[in-house]
Image 1 (tube, rainbow, N blue to C red):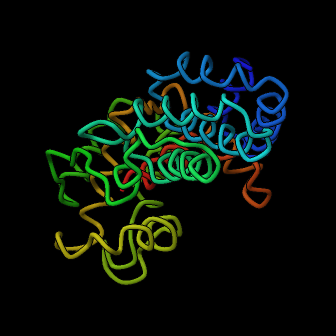
Image 2: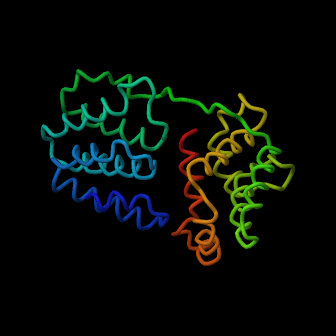
Image 3: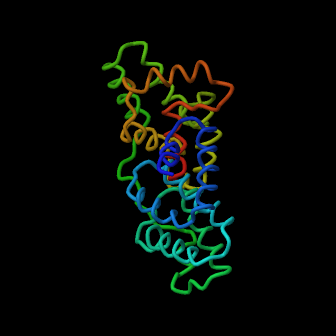
Length: 248
């Protein structure tokens, strides 16, 4: 179970999906192991691992025969995720956690849990700093100055892919920035000059979270070349793009 959980950090979508399905089946067979695994990974800082772990818990909960372990699961998730001032900032993970408790509440007495507290809207910390396009360009330039020229592509790819529909003029957008990120954050745009401001925050977080072209650039270029149409393996930078979108 521990091994399968670590698989969730992979950039291969199919591998993550297979790992999730496998963990659901194991949880169904050994439901008493659920809380132990949740505790083991409760301080993990990889949102992909946390998301898929709670997805597996939900999948197993729906398949487990009604038993007392349901109450233990609901209590643990409530205390660990929702009974706090700040709720874990990941849309899918929070939804999996909420649905698990909601399902258990249909058949078990969990009156000690405040169901209103597990439902949105949630409170979480906002970013302390905003970045202009000029800030981003200067930062990208400083990174490229430290790299061999063949790795510049991996840095430029991140900036270009995160450009929203009108973030850098007409027609200069990246597909991820326009169709994925821009669409996902449209409800927050009123508080900013444009959705590009939000995109710039997310772009900086990619590097703050540890993306390093010296370590990851070669892999990202290989994936872009050989898996552009299959989409089963993602660039490491795109992987981070996706989880940052889930934070807004």
